[in-house]
Amino acid sequence: MGKLYIAEHPLIQSKIRRLRDKNTNNKEFRELVSELSSLLVYEATKNLPVKDVEVETPHEPANGKELDCVVGFVPILRTGINMAEGALGIIPTAKTGHIGIYRDPDTLQPIEYYCKLPKASDDLHMFMLDPCIATGGTDSHAIALLKERNIKNISIICLICAPEAVKKIQSEHTDVDIYAAAMDRGISKDGYILPGLGDVGYRLYGTK
Image (cartoon, rainbow, N blue to C red; front, side, top):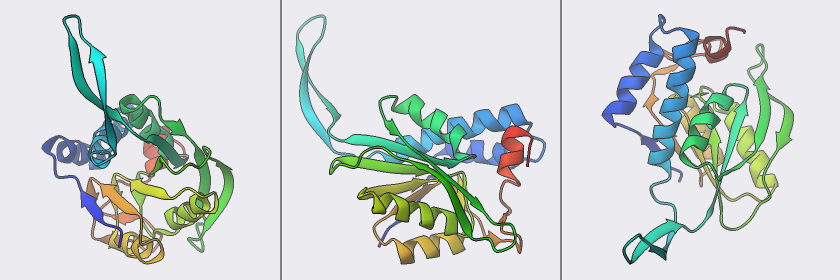
């Protein structure tokens, strides 16, 4: 069963509080999303495999560690783009794909319109980036797209999630972990997380 990890670090919790504030303007909202994404990537990658290496310091050789895997990020368009900026700030060498999916406003079902992904390999660890996971339908569909392309090591990084989404993803994809800053109480009739962040697309870009 995939696990849910809620990051309790004080910096993360302080920034998510500011992100929730309806008075936070677009510029600050974008900056906070990027900063939170960097911190959550730090949390989500703590168990990645490493190997021993030797490095020459100005004085003498020293033993060290480096990643022994390929890291990939795949933001869910369009709101995942700002998360990718923060994620790549931590791991600039990561492979980056993009998945375009939107949620039908009437049925709340995912509709795919774009998919470009890195080449699959056994040592690829892919992290999906999506600010809010509400019903879980979009992310479950995106995970299925990754698996169809033989990408096996998959985790989700989100800012907030709803219990309904966590339940759906854990039931449909038992091998996928979720890393989040908070899990809220539920979703509204129109599919927004409560208390949530509001319309994330609008708050990021000023357009619905």
